[in-house]
Length: 253
Image (cartoon, rainbow, N blue to C red; front, side, top):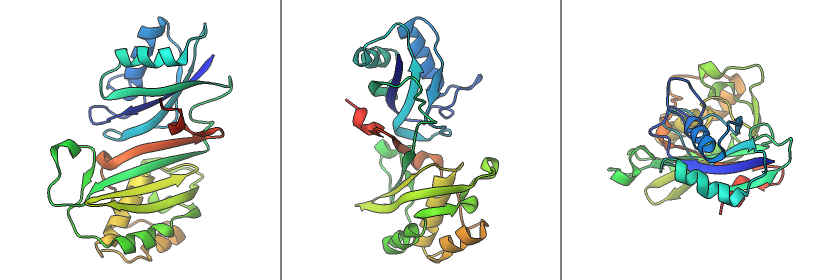
Protein backbone atom coordinates (compact mmCIF):
# COMPACT_ATOMS: atom_id res chain seq x y z
CA UNK A 1 0.00 0.00 0.00
CA UNK A 2 1.34 3.42 -1.03
CA UNK A 3 0.32 6.24 1.32
CA UNK A 4 0.46 10.01 0.91
CA UNK A 5 0.63 12.04 4.12
CA UNK A 6 0.13 15.79 4.41
CA UNK A 7 2.04 17.47 7.22
CA UNK A 8 2.57 20.99 8.49
CA UNK A 9 5.55 22.25 10.45
CA UNK A 10 7.38 25.19 11.90
CA UNK A 11 10.90 25.08 10.53
CA UNK A 12 12.55 27.34 13.10
CA UNK A 13 14.21 24.53 15.06
CA UNK A 14 15.24 22.43 12.07
CA UNK A 15 18.03 22.42 9.49
CA UNK A 16 15.57 22.21 6.62
CA UNK A 17 13.39 19.33 5.50
CA UNK A 18 15.86 16.95 3.85
CA UNK A 19 17.40 14.10 5.83
CA UNK A 20 20.93 14.85 7.08
CA UNK A 21 23.29 12.70 9.13
CA UNK A 22 24.53 15.34 11.56
CA UNK A 23 21.57 17.74 11.85
CA UNK A 24 17.97 17.50 12.95
CA UNK A 25 15.55 17.89 10.06
CA UNK A 26 11.85 17.46 9.37
CA UNK A 27 12.38 14.18 7.52
CA UNK A 28 14.61 12.86 10.30
CA UNK A 29 11.81 13.40 12.80
CA UNK A 30 9.18 11.95 10.49
CA UNK A 31 11.30 8.88 9.74
CA UNK A 32 11.81 8.21 13.46
CA UNK A 33 8.08 8.56 14.17
CA UNK A 34 7.17 6.31 11.26
CA UNK A 35 9.58 3.63 12.47
CA UNK A 36 8.09 3.82 15.97
CA UNK A 37 4.59 3.30 14.56
CA UNK A 38 5.35 0.63 11.97
CA UNK A 39 8.15 -1.22 13.71
CA UNK A 40 10.18 -1.38 10.50
CA UNK A 41 11.96 1.05 8.17
CA UNK A 42 10.42 2.13 4.89
CA UNK A 43 11.87 4.74 2.51
CA UNK A 44 10.06 8.08 2.40
CA UNK A 45 9.70 10.41 -0.57
CA UNK A 46 9.25 14.11 0.12
CA UNK A 47 7.56 16.61 -2.18
CA UNK A 48 10.27 19.23 -1.89
CA UNK A 49 13.33 20.50 -0.04
CA UNK A 50 12.99 23.46 2.30
CA UNK A 51 15.87 25.36 3.86
CA UNK A 52 16.65 26.00 7.52
CA UNK A 53 13.93 28.16 9.06
CA UNK A 54 11.40 27.69 6.24
CA UNK A 55 7.90 26.53 7.26
CA UNK A 56 5.12 24.53 5.64
CA UNK A 57 1.36 24.45 6.01
CA UNK A 58 1.19 21.71 3.37
CA UNK A 59 4.17 19.38 2.89
CA UNK A 60 3.69 15.93 1.36
CA UNK A 61 5.48 12.67 2.06
CA UNK A 62 4.75 9.32 0.44
CA UNK A 63 5.84 5.83 1.50
CA UNK A 64 4.77 2.21 1.21
CA UNK A 65 3.54 -0.05 4.00
CA UNK A 66 3.07 -3.80 4.18
CA UNK A 67 0.71 -5.06 5.47
CA UNK A 68 -1.94 -2.40 4.71
CA UNK A 69 -2.79 0.10 7.44
CA UNK A 70 -5.71 2.44 8.14
CA UNK A 71 -4.64 5.93 6.93
CA UNK A 72 -6.71 7.72 9.59
CA UNK A 73 -5.29 5.63 12.39
CA UNK A 74 -1.81 6.26 11.04
CA UNK A 75 -2.32 10.04 11.38
CA UNK A 76 -3.18 9.75 15.07
CA UNK A 77 -0.33 7.34 15.72
CA UNK A 78 2.27 9.52 14.00
CA UNK A 79 1.14 12.65 15.84
CA UNK A 80 1.64 10.82 19.13
CA UNK A 81 5.29 10.29 18.17
CA UNK A 82 6.11 13.58 16.46
CA UNK A 83 7.17 16.81 18.24
CA UNK A 84 4.51 19.48 18.54
CA UNK A 85 5.98 21.65 15.78
CA UNK A 86 5.39 18.89 13.21
CA UNK A 87 1.83 17.68 12.67
CA UNK A 88 0.25 15.14 10.33
CA UNK A 89 -3.00 16.65 9.06
CA UNK A 90 -4.22 13.98 6.67
CA UNK A 91 -3.38 10.92 4.61
CA UNK A 92 -4.78 8.83 1.79
CA UNK A 93 -3.98 5.74 -0.24
CA UNK A 94 -2.48 6.52 -3.67
CA UNK A 95 -1.46 4.52 -6.72
CA UNK A 96 1.60 2.32 -6.44
CA UNK A 97 3.59 4.50 -8.87
CA UNK A 98 2.78 7.74 -7.03
CA UNK A 99 5.76 9.79 -5.79
CA UNK A 100 5.30 12.81 -3.54
CA UNK A 101 7.82 14.85 -5.55
CA UNK A 102 7.75 13.55 -9.11
CA UNK A 103 3.95 13.24 -9.29
CA UNK A 104 3.47 16.90 -8.34
CA UNK A 105 2.33 19.18 -11.16
CA UNK A 106 2.66 22.40 -9.18
CA UNK A 107 3.47 24.03 -5.86
CA UNK A 108 2.30 27.14 -4.08
CA UNK A 109 4.38 29.24 -1.69
CA UNK A 110 3.28 32.14 0.46
CA UNK A 111 5.84 34.61 1.70
CA UNK A 112 4.49 36.36 4.81
CA UNK A 113 5.62 39.87 5.63
CA UNK A 114 4.73 41.95 8.68
CA UNK A 115 4.71 45.51 7.40
CA UNK A 116 4.25 47.34 10.71
CA UNK A 117 6.57 48.96 13.24
CA UNK A 118 6.72 46.25 15.90
CA UNK A 119 6.26 42.53 15.31
CA UNK A 120 4.44 40.49 17.96
CA UNK A 121 5.96 37.62 19.91
CA UNK A 122 3.59 35.14 18.25
CA UNK A 123 4.92 36.14 14.82
CA UNK A 124 8.57 35.90 15.79
CA UNK A 125 10.32 33.54 13.38
CA UNK A 126 7.13 33.04 11.34
CA UNK A 127 7.06 36.24 9.29
CA UNK A 128 9.62 38.64 7.83
CA UNK A 129 9.51 41.98 9.64
CA UNK A 130 9.76 44.70 6.98
CA UNK A 131 8.80 48.01 8.66
CA UNK A 132 9.29 50.28 5.64
CA UNK A 133 6.48 51.93 3.71
CA UNK A 134 5.70 50.14 0.44
CA UNK A 135 3.50 50.86 -2.56
CA UNK A 136 1.23 47.84 -2.94
CA UNK A 137 0.16 48.93 -6.41
CA UNK A 138 3.72 48.97 -7.75
CA UNK A 139 4.40 45.58 -6.20
CA UNK A 140 1.24 44.15 -7.78
CA UNK A 141 2.11 45.54 -11.21
CA UNK A 142 5.62 44.12 -10.98
CA UNK A 143 4.37 40.74 -9.74
CA UNK A 144 2.11 40.42 -12.78
CA UNK A 145 5.17 40.42 -15.05
CA UNK A 146 6.38 37.22 -13.36
CA UNK A 147 3.35 35.28 -14.59
CA UNK A 148 4.02 33.09 -17.61
CA UNK A 149 6.80 30.85 -18.90
CA UNK A 150 10.22 32.47 -18.48
CA UNK A 151 13.89 31.74 -17.93
CA UNK A 152 14.23 32.57 -14.22
CA UNK A 153 18.04 32.53 -14.10
CA UNK A 154 18.07 35.98 -12.49
CA UNK A 155 15.93 34.65 -9.64
CA UNK A 156 18.01 31.61 -8.70
CA UNK A 157 20.61 31.29 -5.95
CA UNK A 158 24.11 30.41 -7.14
CA UNK A 159 24.14 26.84 -5.88
CA UNK A 160 20.85 26.14 -7.64
CA UNK A 161 22.11 26.88 -11.15
CA UNK A 162 21.11 24.05 -13.51
CA UNK A 163 20.68 23.39 -17.22
CA UNK A 164 16.93 24.10 -17.37
CA UNK A 165 16.07 27.42 -15.72
CA UNK A 166 12.65 27.76 -17.36
CA UNK A 167 9.59 27.66 -15.14
CA UNK A 168 5.93 28.55 -15.61
CA UNK A 169 4.49 30.84 -12.94
CA UNK A 170 0.71 30.62 -12.85
CA UNK A 171 0.10 33.06 -10.01
CA UNK A 172 2.05 35.94 -8.49
CA UNK A 173 -0.17 37.99 -6.23
CA UNK A 174 0.19 40.55 -3.44
CA UNK A 175 -2.52 40.33 -0.79
CA UNK A 176 -2.61 42.84 2.06
CA UNK A 177 -4.36 42.09 5.34
CA UNK A 178 -3.88 45.13 7.52
CA UNK A 179 -0.20 45.25 8.45
CA UNK A 180 0.45 41.87 6.85
CA UNK A 181 1.52 41.34 3.26
CA UNK A 182 1.16 37.89 1.72
CA UNK A 183 3.10 37.32 -1.48
CA UNK A 184 1.58 34.28 -3.17
CA UNK A 185 3.42 32.35 -5.89
CA UNK A 186 2.20 29.26 -7.71
CA UNK A 187 4.23 27.52 -10.43
CA UNK A 188 4.98 24.19 -12.03
CA UNK A 189 8.25 24.27 -10.10
CA UNK A 190 10.67 26.62 -8.39
CA UNK A 191 14.42 27.14 -8.58
CA UNK A 192 16.65 27.38 -5.52
CA UNK A 193 15.75 30.53 -3.53
CA UNK A 194 13.47 31.66 -6.37
CA UNK A 195 10.57 32.72 -4.15
CA UNK A 196 12.82 34.53 -1.69
CA UNK A 197 14.60 36.43 -4.48
CA UNK A 198 11.30 37.36 -6.15
CA UNK A 199 10.05 38.58 -2.78
CA UNK A 200 13.14 40.67 -2.06
CA UNK A 201 12.92 42.23 -5.51
CA UNK A 202 9.23 43.07 -5.13
CA UNK A 203 9.83 44.64 -1.72
CA UNK A 204 12.56 46.85 -3.19
CA UNK A 205 10.14 47.85 -5.94
CA UNK A 206 7.58 48.65 -3.26
CA UNK A 207 9.97 50.99 -1.48
CA UNK A 208 11.01 52.69 -4.72
CA UNK A 209 14.58 51.34 -4.76
CA UNK A 210 13.80 49.59 -8.04
CA UNK A 211 11.43 50.52 -10.90
CA UNK A 212 8.45 48.32 -11.77
CA UNK A 213 10.20 47.46 -15.04
CA UNK A 214 13.13 45.85 -13.19
CA UNK A 215 11.58 42.39 -13.20
CA UNK A 216 10.99 42.47 -16.95
CA UNK A 217 14.61 43.52 -17.44
CA UNK A 218 15.86 40.72 -15.16
CA UNK A 219 13.80 38.10 -16.99
CA UNK A 220 15.10 39.37 -20.33
CA UNK A 221 18.79 39.54 -19.40
CA UNK A 222 19.01 36.78 -16.80
CA UNK A 223 21.21 39.03 -14.67
CA UNK A 224 20.97 39.77 -10.96
CA UNK A 225 22.25 42.84 -9.17
CA UNK A 226 22.84 43.82 -5.57
CA UNK A 227 19.36 45.37 -5.22
CA UNK A 228 17.65 42.02 -5.85
CA UNK A 229 18.11 40.74 -2.33
CA UNK A 230 17.12 37.32 -1.02
CA UNK A 231 14.41 37.68 1.61
CA UNK A 232 15.15 35.67 4.79
CA UNK A 233 13.87 32.16 5.37
CA UNK A 234 11.48 32.82 8.24
CA UNK A 235 8.76 34.40 6.10
CA UNK A 236 8.55 31.54 3.61
CA UNK A 237 5.79 28.91 3.78
CA UNK A 238 5.16 25.99 1.43
CA UNK A 239 1.40 26.38 1.22
CA UNK A 240 0.20 23.84 -1.33
CA UNK A 241 1.24 20.90 -3.49
CA UNK A 242 -0.87 20.15 -6.55
CA UNK A 243 -1.27 16.68 -8.05
CA UNK A 244 -3.37 15.33 -10.89
CA UNK A 245 -6.13 14.57 -8.39
CA UNK A 246 -6.05 18.00 -6.73
CA UNK A 247 -4.45 20.22 -4.11
CA UNK A 248 -3.07 18.21 -1.20
CA UNK A 249 -4.71 20.69 1.19
CA UNK A 250 -8.02 19.00 0.35
CA UNK A 251 -6.77 15.83 2.06
CA UNK A 252 -6.48 17.53 5.45
CA UNK A 253 -8.96 16.36 8.07
